[in-house]
Length: 213
Image (cartoon, rainbow, N blue to C red; front, side):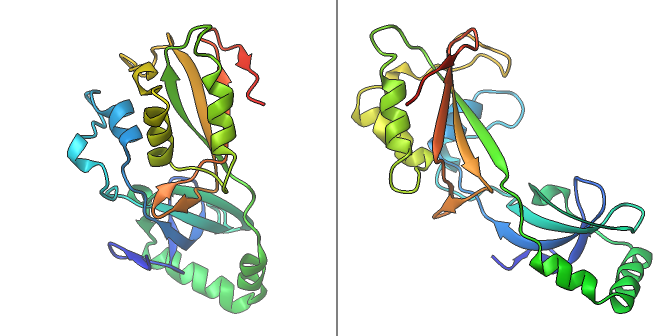
């Protein structure tokens, strides 16, 4: 994906975080059954079942920051939804071009900058008992194989193991009644436009950490 709306890779933009950023990559993300299960019934951000398998309207965007909001060199990185991208004003664009012309090493430094590992956690609740708590370790082992798993693969595994009925539907974002699982993604890595998870954390309803090894 080289462009999104009027934005393109290599363009200088503003985003959710302060500063002047360069677009490095667009990351299209597909809606999976997870999104429908978690958000399907909430009044805001509702996901409908027929959206499963389609791309989300806004891609994720990988950004490198060259300047802070005062146009001082401050290299860094960020990810945001394409929704938050903003064009520079003509004055801001001219400022960027002037500084880069005067300091060509700025872009060399930015090119060499390696993005730090960025962790994102996606949550899911299950209604577990002493008889079913063992599935946490089984699921963790499954996720840690083959360079990670997508939610489509995870939900397929739950169904194959007859665990899918244990999925706990939260009544609201603050409902904390079920055992809570956190699926770990690094740098928004994807497989076939689906988020890829490489590890799992698990907690009791009282937020006591469960051993997943």
